[in-house]
Each structure stands twice: as structure tokens, then as C-alpha cells.
Amino acid sequence: MATKPPTYFLITTPLPYVTHVEINRPSKLNAFHEPMWLELKTIFDNLSHSPDVRAIILSGAGDKAFTAGLDVQAASQDGVLAQQSGESDIARKAQAIKRHVVEFQDCIQSIEKCEKRMFSPPLSVTAQVDRGEIAANSLWYIQR
Image (cartoon, rainbow, N blue to C red; front, top):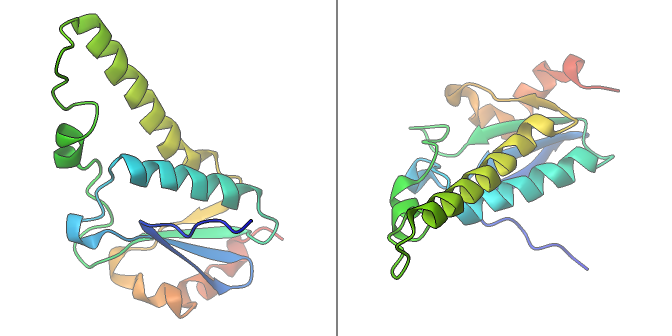
């Protein structure tokens, strides 16, 4: 069964054993919303266990930002921070927000827990990634 291609990330292989993961939501400065961070976890969990990957380059699309972090607008409109009609118990609201934050942190920590070497080039040189220049200059870091 084929896996569905990512919606918010571009994944390429500029060199053997090197995978480039590009956050691809430049219109929102690559800000993360819930479907995006869930996709991030899936990507990094899969790459962490892949025998075809020894190093990962993480970059952001666009020329303004690597990532703006959390998409606060989306979180306040659709996410757990949105006003919940009918729920008046503040403790239940707080518990729901806590569960959501822990889930978000787990997704972001998938990068930290990844068993492969990570590189995040400066914004000005991310165009070089697709040509393999960054990876070629960093090959001595890659685990054999």
C-alpha cells in the first residue's frame, strides 16, 4: 500500500542517504497548525527508521522565514484554543488544552528523537540544498 505524499512538506533526496525535508507553507511563513504538526511527526518517525537515510536537512520554503512557529490564527479559530460552546467547566477546558499541548510537543520532539543526523542550513543557502551543495559539503558528518 502506497503512502500518501505529504501536504505541507516537500521531501527530496539530493544525494544518496541524504533526505531534504522542506516545510512548505510559505504563504503563512511556514507556521504550524494541527494537520501540519501531525504530518511532521509521521515524516520524522518514518525517516528515523529508514535504512535509506543517514542524514536529514530541514529547511523552510520561502525567503522570509524558516518557520513562524504556531499558527495562532488557525489555533484560535479551529483548534483547542477556539471558544468551545456548551463547555462551562474551566477544569475540563484546561485539561483539554493540556492534552493538546502535550500532543503538539510530542510531534515537535519527533525531530529531536530522530536517530539520524540533522542539518538546518541558513535561510540564504537553502536553494543550494536541491543542487546537493549543502549535503556535499556536509557529507563527512553523515554516519556510515
